[in-house]
Image (cartoon, rainbow, N blue to C red; front, top):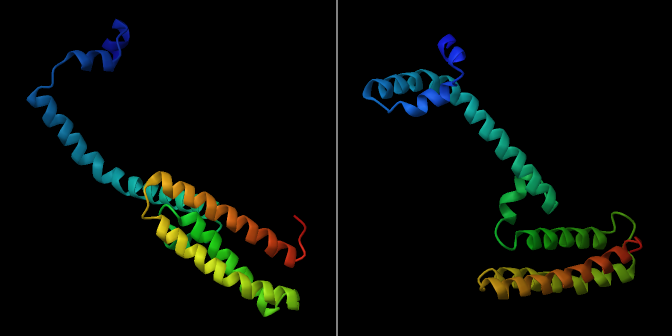
Length: 160
């Protein structure tokens, strides 16, 4: 190392010039055999942490718990998540747990459930379409969900 410092060359400069010989290859393999078992647990832990972070990010974007993420995968996953959340909100609206279960709210929930079911079927059907038609179908389904969500918020007493 001291010789390299005096010459002004780095170790990368010197190693780039030297061809890979059998002795050098054996030395590198030996170092790898010693270092790899020491670093493997840390690499596995880092990969697990990165995967958990990515799953939490995706679940947050979809508005679901990370353990429910598998149910909302694929091209229509975000629409399925929205439909699921609207269906849950309709059940809560109809049950009257929050005190919002007026006659109009119950009627809205009854009328909207078949629309939500149809939208879920449409998302599943669109998953089999070519990409351009699928995107067009998803935009139309998204607009319909937007309308349902706005009406749902009105029945919950939240101004939009």
